[in-house]
Length: 72
Image (cartoon, rainbow, N blue to C red):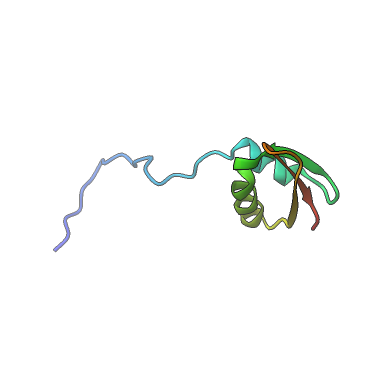
């Protein structure tokens, strides 16, 4: 059996997190635009681009950096 409870405030647990700077940047990019990110952010960039429906290509610029282009 379930009990009805009244006047219980709604928790913030499970709420959406605010968009991060990488996601905001990828969303603003137009086809042909590129950005330079740390190599450690390469996987995050792919996941972010997939989440917003953007296709990207990456190339290693340096040991520490990767260049990301929006292609579609």
